[in-house]
Image 1: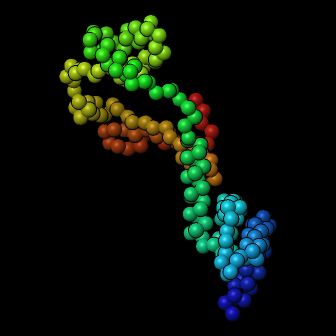
Image 2: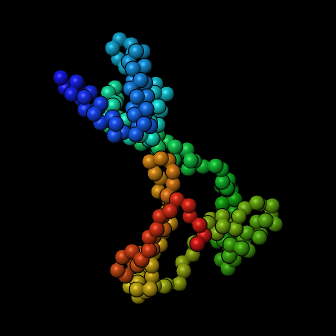
Length: 207
């Protein structure tokens, strides 16, 4: 009786649905029948192709959750989130970069900086280039011995003295459910911690 009532309600609501939405729901129902036909010993086995199909249909037409019977809606949402994490992990994978410096070279940089306290990173970098070591100046500065700097005001004092004239800003990206990117730009006043500016766009420009 409940199933018949649900069918009648679906028929009454069908004229108000878009044609693409109806076709998407029909495609999901047909695919569920295909999965049920190939089940073994009463157990439903879903392949990666099946999961990909349901996830794509959910991305395009979230209303298909109402016709899913062999998969719980929360399971489908979990698949989509897991796929999104794997996609962005693949997008943000390391594509190479600067090779690591050998231990002997790091020791040499440290030794030169200790024995020549008046030499800075540019001069030590030049000496290493003369010796045949291909290394960046920033790497030399990274592995030099850090010396005690003259005392200066700390961050707490700096913020207390100049907070009304300081603003913090950030430019970051927001992944969307459709695997796209939105770019957000935010400016916050430090003294009152209120928003001075915020904007979000899918196509950022220099302006």
